[in-house]
Length: 180
Image 1 (tube, rainbow, N blue to C red):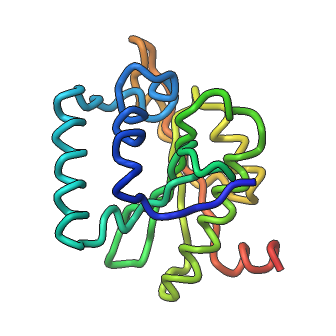
Image 2: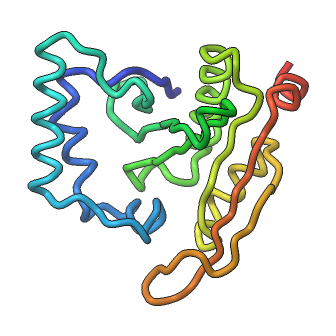
């Protein structure tokens, strides 16, 4: 059983550990983007700690994926693709490879889509983008009923090789129809 929850102050050590660049998930999760160094991650964690201690809302656009032992397995997130047109992109990362291939991503992203649509009534659509080498994410988007909307050819470079950038989306009405 998994749940989505907000990051807590006592999660910061484990969260920092999983953000470190040596973990396998980095080879799939946007491997074309620069990774934070250990020092940068330490600074991010310290900043989060300071926000917690001030009573501020921390990582409002993310949720931790945890199991029944309350261990951090991964995270889901959203970011504005176009705030002017109420278009969010969502994402998911399963940090611990021991939890890959067990359906956790499907359950977590389904919960997250429901939560985001419920919290943001103005949204008509959600999108997800990945690269053509991340077959697991492509299959996940399709399993969730998302439609392939765009493919940007040779737009990502991973290990010196070009890959396509692929975008999927779901409209609120489609989501509600298939999940009621």
